[in-house]
Amino acid sequence: MRSELQEKLDQICRERIEESQRARMRDFPLTPARGRLIALQRALFNKNRRDCWGAVQCSAPIEVKRVIWQHEQEELIKDPRCGSDHYSLHVRRCMALGLTREEIENAQPLPSSRSAFYAWLYVARTKPWLQALSSSSILERQANMMSAMGEMRQNTEKWIKELGLTERDMEVHTANENADGDHSDMMAGIFDKYATTPELEALVLQGARESLEINRTFSAGLRDAALLLE
Image (cartoon, rainbow, N blue to C red; front, side, top):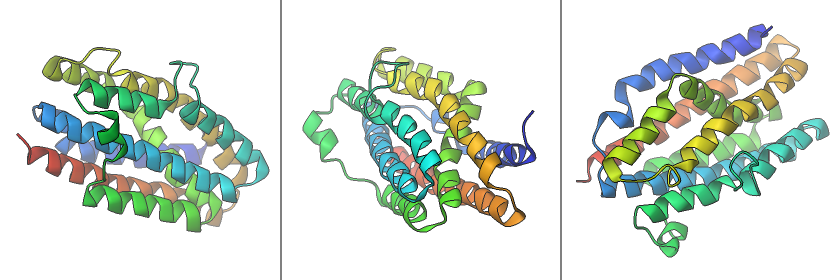
């Protein structure tokens, strides 16, 4: 049975998903230039996630450090679901779009992306660990809910159809889709165990809401920049 806190976190995600569906990236045509921009910014997003999860681990209790360590082993070293770390899958998609490894490694964030990355990292480094953990984990909870709605599969099919990519080129989507549910579940019990007062629960909910607000900035900036390209 899901706890009241879990239901509240789900509701925060549902509200954000309903809002985001009014301006989805899959509602405009992809071009090679747009694909390269989105793929590069998503690769940078993955790097920022690694920084944030490392910062959260630093301030968390040892039991929670172990859970985050397991989480990051799959992200950074090898996810048994796909046989690869996740950043390498981002690189694969970028290269399938014609980018060189040097271009990928030297890519710079859009101003909106940089603002979002700084904000997420600020929360991860400076806020109470429960709030910081919620800020990082809510993104996976939302992604898992969107996958259950078929959003990820539809997005994958769009990239394949409009840019001529293959399923293997788009494994970054399927790997994340398969992992996000497990990763979200890994954190759920932590909140139920540690958020034992109204004040601590409020930190968890605040971290979730603020993180999804930051994600709104990241997504809107990426969408606007992509629409400027032919």
